[in-house]
Length: 344
Image 1 (cartoon, rainbow, N blue to C red):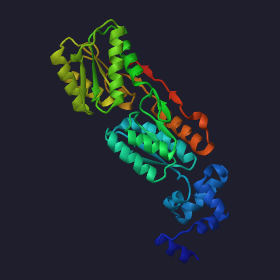
Image 2: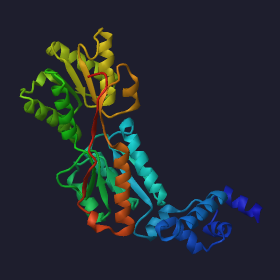
Image 3: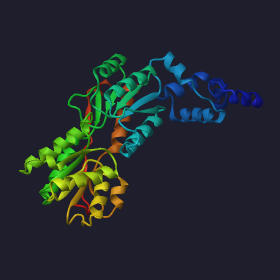
């Protein structure tokens, strides 16, 4: 018998019946534990999963999705997979989804709405149970496809005025405004702002708007020479400092809408022999480890990245498994926190 199983394992022929035999349960119980984990006890599910791993069974997820209205996969579309800010959100999503027997499939849109549209279509073809979109602006066709499919969707990355379905995030506008006001109240008067390009990026546009609103509240007229749109990277942060200083030499604070930009700006200031914050202050978005360990440590905004992923998964599972229709239309604001450090 063991020799026969070894042969089947080599040829991909391990069957659900083999899992049932190893677990000492019926094939129906195995099927339910894998496709509808909420309908079996945690102990039973763990027993089946152990048997799956021991015999090397690979569930036919495609066949299952074709024979039912949904799979156990959730699709996530992010603008860029090389941006570390998504790591904690991914972790929060994955931890909660895995605990209920669901998997996360990730794709990159490259900040291109038409690419997001194609990815939405591809995920829906795979009969995903839900979608997570790290964006709040979508093409008309993407919206139509989602409405037609009827799958639950959570938008992240920003707070939409009218969600496609559900949304979990923080306000980029309010976060940028709060940090700019914080710098103004510390006494800085020529506050520059470096942002990623605003084209096809609602988060960047909202951050610029928040920065401008704060200056107005501080009684200052926003100076376009103090606003730099740039690409991601240390070199871009350094270049942004160069551009601003050439235009406004008396600049005394530099607020960067990204952790890597902020570190690049800090390195450029140190290269020039400027003492931070005596000559110029530095502030950032996102409380990543790097900002704590450079010298001086960088004042920043702590954003609820892990919590966004965790709450997103909880809301999706509520809709998928518990038919929690009351969640439709929900917009959850998880807020932010200013972390004061030595750079300002």
